[in-house]
Length: 195
Length: 195
Image (cartoon, rainbow over all chains, first blue to last red; front, side):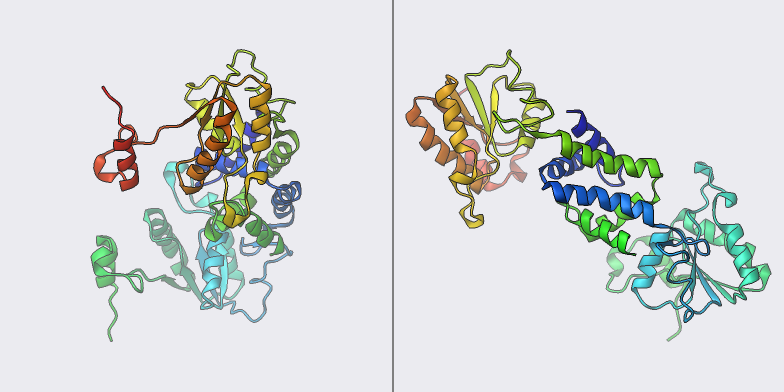
């Protein structure tokens, strides 16, 4: 059945969806009511048509500029630099950060041919120069590429007379020393705070 | 972002796709090339348009009658009864069974309001009477509902002068006595074969 194989192939291309899951989903989809199946297809098409990148920060948006960039109540002196637009969603969920964002669109990864020119670094420098920015918070992920990217950006930005900070690493709240990996445990000692 | 929320909601309705996975998939989809996203939407629509149930056995098909039912080389004296059209795919993969299938469309489940009339049982009886069937293999899953459905069908079909068999239960090949559950282990003794 060509249509079924085609659907399985397409679903299989999604991240984290293996062959078996793709099959299960495909069989579920062809068992759906016509209306529900079309609504799923339509939701994909609509999202693709309506959502684009914010020209300022790189966040996803349905408006011309994203909700964060167009919110005058947000502090424009602090920019939190993240890898992807999805990270903004995680940050916003904690209602802790009231500054603005800048999406890099990835991390430095020479093996994959991703150097500084492939990331939105020039745009970040321009914003620092134009928007009277006082602090840059580097919130790339605490993995090898994320750390390297943060170091690279820190070196690049510090000469511009801007405070540069990195999100804290340590033991997660509710975590247990026994189950924390060695690197995190070492970081939690290195970054200890006086009480 | 309404389009994004809508897409997440729709993906979240798929089986085994929780909130977090739906978010991850939605962000992946809106990051796809336009062409790839539309191909995914199109694959869903096409599958839904082209695939329907085989009027004979209940398998999925793009033709009028499914590949198994229209294959004259298959033995029409044996019918393997399965819960869903998906089970036919698993059976066909082993290239062991050369008879035909009959999809019940579920299992007896009084709690969910599924009685004999909600399953394709009348159609099965009609096939047994019309098609000169010699054996019915009951291949419902070995869970409570599947076993109950198999017992019900066995009682119903035996008086029609047809051999009724049930797929074997036991320890999976490569399995280990230590990790097999008690019921399966008991079944493996009960269904032991002389060597």
